[in-house]
Image (cartoon, rainbow, N blue to C red; front, side, top):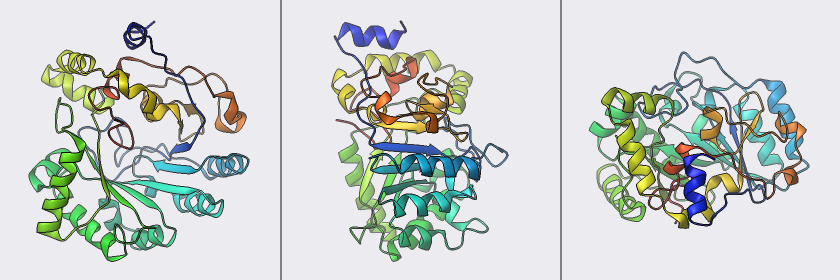
Length: 314
């Protein structure tokens, strides 16, 4: 029994899977950015990428499920040559599609029509923007990222994003360092006020996410000598009310080779499920009520108001 399970037990709680509602696909670790907080350790030099055969198997598996949403992530998932195939096929099956977009990808070579493609297929965009000021964004994500991100958001707005109800656009906030995110609702109001006033930008919702001590961010904490301090902060802020709404309960994470995990964080730690090696060997009902694999990183999703791919959970 790990420390997180002990804390659950002390609150008479269990963490088990519900019915799968979201299939989250990690298309690989290649990215056009190298962000300081990235738990995927993604970057331009990474070569892990989902192959066409794997993408086709996933599409075929989806046909026989009632899963409503396909959530596509990476790296920068748009750099995978099969990204658009997956979007088209999932939309043709009548499923909602989400793209976890870093915004600057819209300005990369061979991505000139990406914004138009996403709009044409009514893809919901979840876009990284860790602050509404250039200093903080560029410090976390690289020089010039804020300016490119603003231009990308303006382009998406011009296509109808955040204005047309069918074109939803959300922003993602991550703290710069070893702190918890502030109250999501208040921060969202600040974002909307500042981005509207200075850049004419509109968006639907802000997702405030905690940084989990995994991979690149964990390495940063160790360099700063704050790893133990941050781990204690997360555990002290454990909130039992978050358990019922954690993303790992209704989201199944799929790696770039097709292997299955309870969440994207478990994927990066290689905490694999044992019901099947790969998605296409699994029946969705096999996972219902199954216990979720946990570790000390789970305190990051259960601290304060909670944290998930959709932001605060309470």
